[in-house]
Length: 172
Length: 192
Picture 1 (cartoon, rainbow over the protein chains, first blue to last red):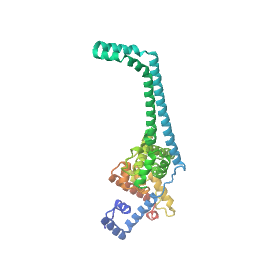
Picture 2: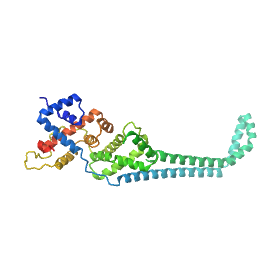
Picture 3: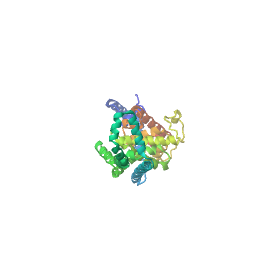
Picture 4: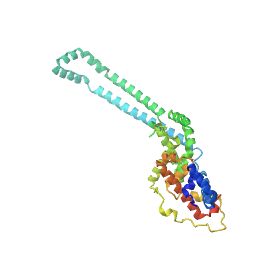
């Protein structure tokens, strides 16, 4: 009589044997008290392994996790907004300071002269555009400020969308 | 929870619904606790590790592609988080049984003492104690199979092991536990 090994007995209990193997082992178990006893030991052990583990999480675990994720998420959004605010602030201050203390007109005039020296055709065009140059310099501040404000709105929008639709982006 | 329910839950969480995330945590905290309990001996760290697992899951939920069950994906995060913790604490993982494990008798045998009263609790207690003596991966395989009713393939996905290795771990761990029980108790006492 060939006794099934431990692996076969375990597979029998797990119900992972082929039908033929299962029938053979069932037949053997009907004739062999020793194997039946081993199978019973495994069966008892399986019952013990299915017993719930003694440790438990605190009753408010789920709420604690949600709170941690919320705080993490809000903290991250505030941090990003703060970074954007600071960068925008310094860019605006830098541009305004540059515009206030640096006269761009001579630079543009020099540029125009250079062009005059090299390209006659361009020279004519620049003469025609003299008035436009001045208007451009005057409006420069306004355009830069408008672009910065639009950029700021764009980044805030992206940031809020990301924090809403993509949890990963707002955390770590 | 079926596939459609999983998808709906994930979509709600991704749209910023924290109540849905609460449901997610309630649904899967048992699984995460089972893995953490089997891998981490320090009870005071377990709850923090469980929380860390869920924060990581929230963090990476947008990367979940529904190629496996949500529980399998979360189980993998729990397993990896625990492994990282153990590596950080320099706890040896002991990937395999030492050959001596099955012969060293660290419990005095009581099998020949006739007056001993064997209770179910004694056997359960011995199994719990012996569980701590076996390598971490074996413990997790046993827990996922018997407590979470996971298939070999699902356990393989969680532990990133081939199915054959999972089967082998499971058989060897159970045989080890059975031999340990037989060193401590008589055969008749083990049949409940």
